[in-house]
Image (cartoon, rainbow, N blue to C red; front, side):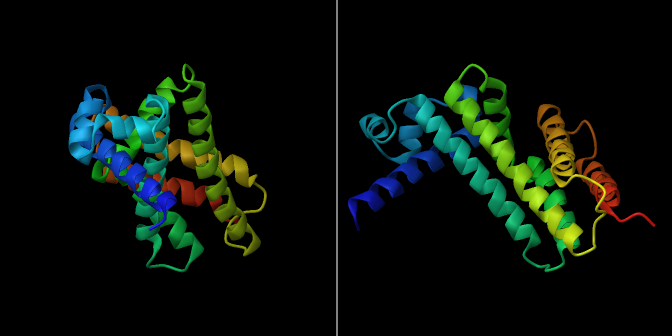
Length: 200
C-alpha cells in the first residue's frame, strides 16, 4: 500500500476513534489520551497526523458530514421517485438526532464555536452550504419535472427545508424526550412537502 494511502487510513482511524469517544462521553469530556487509547496509537502519532486540535476537529466535522450523508442515502435507496426520496431523506435526517446523534452533536458544537475559530467556522459554513445545495438541486429537479411548484426560489426553499430539519433535531438533542420526535418529524415532512406541491 502506498504511503499516502497508509496515511489516509491512519488519519481515518484516529478520526473514527475520536467520534466514538465523543459518542460515549461528549466533546467536553473527550481528551487526546482517550482518543489515543481508543485508536490504539501513541499521542505522538496523533500529533504526526494532525498538526493541532483544530485540524483534528475539522476531520471530525467532515466525518460527521459523511455519516449524515450515508444515513440519508441508505434511507432513500429503496425509491427512485424524487418526491418519495425527498420525503424519506427529510424524515431520516430528523430521526438521526435520536438514532445516530453524534453527527448532530458535533455539528451543534462546531456551529456554536465557529465564530471564535475561523477555520472551523469556514468548514461549518461550507457544510451548511453543502446541505442547502443538495436540497436545492433536488427541488429544481422536481420543478423541472413538474412535481414541485415553479413560483418559488429553490435556494430559499432549501434553506427553509434545512432550517426545519436542523431546528427539530437540535431541540431534541438539547432536551431529549421533551416532545415526540417521530410525530414532529412526520408533521414537518408533510408541511415541507405540501409547500412544494404545485398550486391547484
